[in-house]
Length: 125
Image (tube, rainbow, N blue to C red; front, side):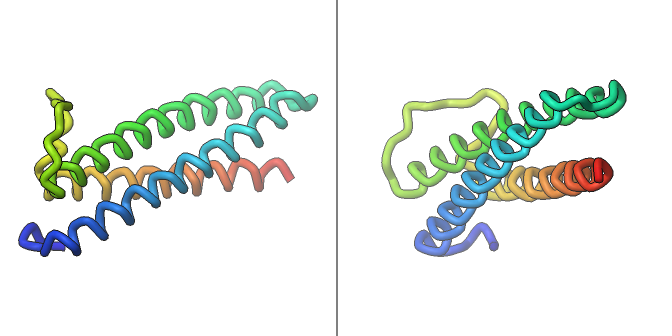
């Protein structure tokens, strides 16, 4: 989507991103529950090491998802002409191309994490 998108198109894109981030957060919750089940089992030490590794990555993924969701909401408010009182030092929310780039990176990193997680789960047999 170009930066000259109409406000309706822009709001539709921002709403789509919010929904995608919500879905990621739900999936992360399910993955963390699966890891908890593995951790409570009598898994070998090397498996538990991988569980801890994924727990840390999923925790960070959730933090990033929370940041993205918040920033997308703030961008939507800005683009709907509702004044926003929230300012960020390092996460521009009013610059659509930057937000779009961040969302693309978020999507790529999540898909990589999800793939690695699914491979780990499949390796457990």
